[in-house]
Image (cartoon, rainbow, N blue to C red; front, side, top):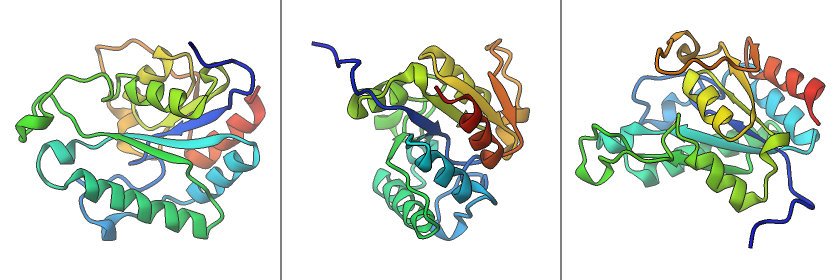
Length: 194
C-alpha cells in the first residue's frame, strides 16, 4: 500500500559540500568543516517556512578507505550541532559511500543512491512522507540538478562551490533557478513555495 498523499510534507534537500560547508577536496577531518556564510540563516528560513531540511551527499572518501561511514556520521552530527547553535535545524542526513572505482571492494558498486541517481531522495521521501512535487533540491553541482529532476523536485543550482562550473556533457539538464549561495536559494524557495 502506498503512502497517503494527505498530510505529506515538503522538504528542501541540500547537498553538503560546497552548499552548506566549504568544499574541501577529500574531506575527512572535522576540524576542516567550515559553514559557509549565510548557510545557517538560510536553513533557519527553510525551517520557519515549515520545510524539512534533509542533506543528501555523495561521500566517496569512504569508498577510498580514507574515513569510515561512522566517521562521516560523526562529522554530520558535529555539523548539525554547530548549525543548531545558530538556530538552524537539519532534520536528516543521507549519504552514499559507494563509487564504481572504489579502493575498497565492498563499496565498488554502481548504485542508485549515488547522485546523479535519485536513490537517497527516494528513500528519504519514503522515510519522511515527503511530497516531492512541492519540494526543492539545492546543490552546487549538475548532479544535484539531475537527481532532483529525476523525481520532479524544483532544482536550484548554487555558485558557492566548484560543482556548478563543472559542465557534465552527459546531462543536458538546466536547473529551475540559479542562486549565488544558499541564502539566495532560501529566498527563491520563500518566493516560490507551494
